Length: 357
Ligand SMILES: Cc1cc2nc3c(=O)[nH]c(=O)nc-3n(C[C@H](O)[C@H](O)[C@H](O)COP(=O)(O)OP(=O)(O)OC[C@H]3O[C@@H](n4cnc5c(N)ncnc54)[C@H](O)[C@@H]3O)c2cc1C
Ligand code: SF4
Ligand code: SF4
Ligand code: SF4
Image 1 (cartoon, rainbow, N blue to C red):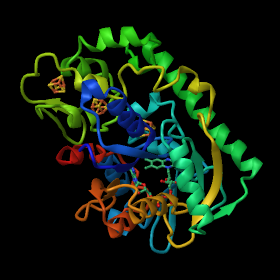
Image 2 (image 1 turned 30 degrees about the vertical axis):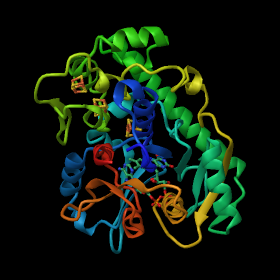
Image 3 (image 1 turned 90 degrees about the vertical axis):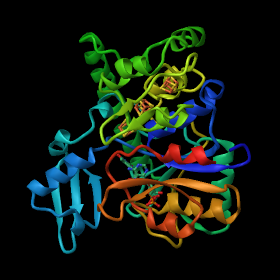
Image 4 (image 1 turned 60 degrees about the horizontal axis):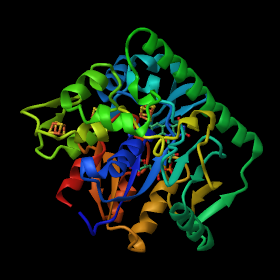
């Protein structure tokens, strides 16, 4: 693991998980993730319920070419038509943990990418770290991506959309807390208290504080950090088979929905709709189409081409179940290109695959 460098792509909650695994490395064992590419994310769905919803609408997942959420509509692109549903109809299969999530633009990533904020066919790219900046500058100066000036109107739209998610979900958090359902990842706790509290916690606490509270994002980081492999994850939640190792608290520290140091998730991020950043662009790949500007795939191909990373952690599609997301750790450019596009359902990111590294 020590000499490997890995880039990952993920939703904001998965990016938080990766950040916590490394920040609390002494407790969790750390990881070889060296670069985080975060996606914008308003919500995510359960694959099983998404499939059922589409079946009710007589849509076969095999016929779907693309999913897209635009202008408050859930759009399903078929061969020769687009079926549109009001976004409110997706609430029945939205994962309930998304209702308490206040990160829209992957605040903890090196580079964040989404569609809102840019013209059609382009991606909005928020660069947050020097490492991220070097990559994007290189892509631009080598004409590997095309740039459009950021439009003030679209940038303001992006801020509004992000603020709406933050404010709606802060309200949901208040409601849960008032109803004795703790949302502990949003609690103001200092570093000493975090250590004190977390050092008393093993999987049973994770189960009661996060999983049973409907706060689990199904990221898979608890499964990855467990030193004795007793955590398993099914389609719905993590569970434990066996007895915890004495003195181990790794899963509790790694979970994105337990306490986090202010040094990882700064408490004032909720007042910054785009988080902290260095640069922001509207870009599209010169070669590849993708969900939007194909920028995520372009960055991954560049990283592999230049040997800046050894492999990339991506989310592809299950060959036997259309649109079912499958995590993949790969160094194959073909696999990267095959993984283009957004699979609108949750999957434990492939942290587990890093175990063999
Ligand atoms: C669940 C979800 C919700 C989103 N919501 C929004 C939104 O509200 N507003 C917005 O502007 N953008 C949203 N996005 C991001 C958007 O759909 C595009 O992924 C982004 O603009 C990048 O486009 P691209 O053409 O550069 O990526 P591409 O080059 O097409 O690459 C897409 C990458 O996304 C990864 N990926 C695909 N599905 C998943 C998944 N389920 N989990 C983790 N990684 C995945 C793949 O590994 C692939 O490398 C969302 C993405 C996801 C996965
Ligand atoms: S918790 Fe839901 S809304 Fe938040 S980043 Fe994860 S999938 Fe997206
Ligand atoms: S041994 Fe127990 S506390 Fe440690 S990571 Fe595994 S499940 Fe969690
Ligand atoms: S309980 Fe495990 S899978 Fe769920 S959010 Fe926490 S670390 Fe991720």
